[in-house]
Image 1 (cartoon, one colour):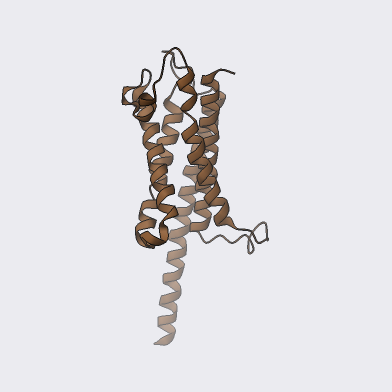
Image 2: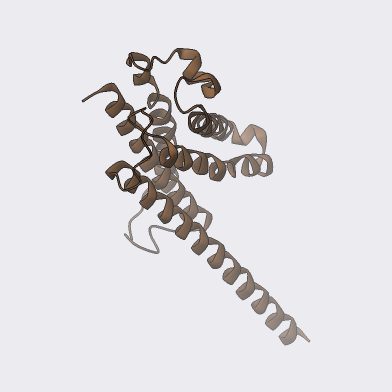
Length: 198
């Protein structure tokens, strides 16, 4: 296994954790209850959401570090921290770095959510979507071999990222649809109660 392979695998693990984290977050947002619904057992879904978030951040932080050991092209710490100057794929790497920096903001503000207040924390937590988009775009556009060849979108790693992205898009669309349906049902009930009251 080369350092480029290691970097690619760490990135794919980060994408997997991000996908799980967003799916669990959508379930929490939709008031999912593991007791009422499957698996009909009590467990702390918030704890799982928190740890998948930590996993996403941890593997995203680890993902570029093996590049420091690569000889051709050679990456410096500055190239990883501010990829605008990286020797290969600066735009793609900058998009990935933007996703990482957004993840740091999300995790840190989540640790201080009580101090920040629910409203501000919730607004900042929506940064999860642009962070995930940046991670997925970075994962799709980068060439893991760091050569001038075109990206192979049928490569196993790319297919994994594509599948994760489709899952998130579909789950988010379902959540928006479900939320609208729920709000409409609530309005209909309120109108029905008003009519009964008159």
